[in-house]
Image 1 (cartoon, rainbow, N blue to C red):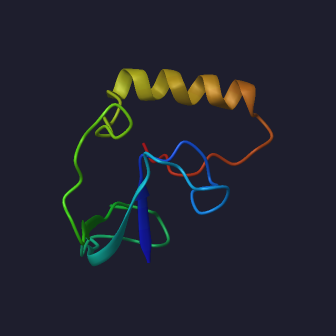
Image 2: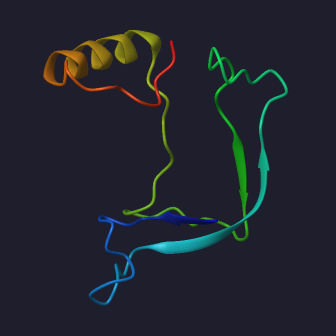
Length: 91
């Protein structure tokens, strides 16, 4: 399993690749003991990479939205994509 950071497109290995992309191996995945595959409670995991990620203009931390912003963004997305499934959001 590989993790790619800093890539602007999915073509990181084609056409000369993306000069800002960094590829890491996964050393360890930690899944909470409280994870429930039926209800999706605790559906988050920690991934330890094979190296240190250096932040740059192309590689920045992910910020989880505040509850207020998350609700607003979810409603916008539902409005725009009402016929699709929204993945990766659990309230």
